[in-house]
Amino acid sequence: MKRRNFIQKTAASSVFLGLGGLSLSSFTTLNTKHLTILHTNDVHSYIDPFPPNHPKNPNMGGVARRATIIETIRNENSNVLLLDAGDIFQGTPYFNYYGGELEFKLMSMMKYDLATIGNHDFDNGIEGLYKQLPNANFEFVSANYDFKNTIMDGHVKPYKIFHKAGIKVGVFGLGINLDGLVDKRNFKETVYNNSIDIAQDMSRILKYEEKCDLVICLSHIGYKYKDEPDKICDTKLAGLTKNIDLIIGGHTHTFLDKPTILNNAEGKEVLVNQVGCYGVNLGRIDFYFDDEKSRVSSGKSIIIV
Image (cartoon, rainbow, N blue to C red; front, top):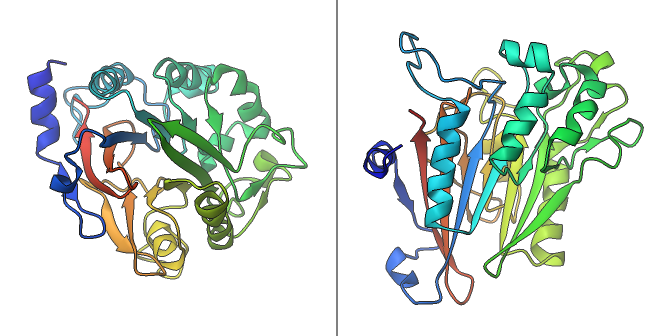
């Protein structure tokens, strides 16, 4: 994709998000550190672009186009993290035929850094997920799925820490309750633990014990449920916890043009973002850190065409 077209496609959906009353002009020193978070969710095995005559997503998406955009961004900024919020599997014949092998190999070629596990990633059973792990040159995090009595034990971490240009980033994963959503035979003895309790514990560990400058929750619990207002979701998670800076979500296929800004339990701002489904969009959030690790951010949803 030509640079001019790339800029035109992304500029319309870009927004500046100031944190803590700061402005980008406060970060104009030579020591400003720039971190870019790229993310996808609910790609559901959509490898090819939608056809030109598709009623909702004509000529949109496609792994090759996403890879081109990611490469362009990495050429502009070397400090990039590429994350996925689950439901990598299920949705096209590619999954039916290859069982997830192609999805993991392509994500590895795009150099994904980390992913969490969605409910559809169990569609070939926990054995099917385990079988494809050698094809993934990236790790998986899930803090509230306990795999100790399954073959996935030891293959999924609760969190992972990245170091980018002196910025310490902690990322932990959360999955949705599988009971009643996934056939018990598919997830076997996997135990689901309460998302809020786990998120509180993980964010505290990452913020205060690991001393992370940025704490990210990679979530597959859903953005919001209009028909189930009491159900735990990303927006509730933001308001009921402390120490999370960014929630990257999945499951509900929610298309956000820009991150939602919410207040946490201490009244501090939390960014919540999700970019729909099927690889149509790529989320981008840029953080700028000054010498004292104070920060501002900007977010956008990149349409892949």
